[in-house]
Image: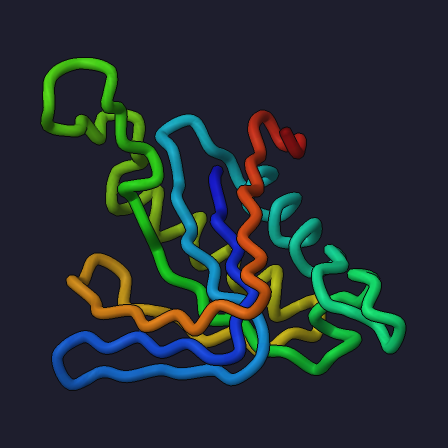
Length: 150
């Protein structure tokens, strides 16, 4: 499982008539591979919930999203598993199928919520317009495989 975390001052997602937005927090782009398990989703969500990516009063990156009362906008993103080694068009054969991806994406978000976080989501399987107002910028790639953080 791969998650691109971007610390944001605000973020929105729009798909047709659907809309979600957050203020200060994280915009997470979440990719699920065809080899991912429930353990990967849980472990990665727990890691992100505990990660300290916000500044304290001394300007040191030392506070978690819970510490600052931030929110999460979680967007499913199968293209994080693009294979660009051959040709000029990416292949997505490593991305999980719709049913598996939806199940693990939901579990990932539920695990974040179980950590006491406010989680808003994009619209699974939909074409979306995502606006990200980076803060920092801080952008971090988190990965898990076989239930372990890479």
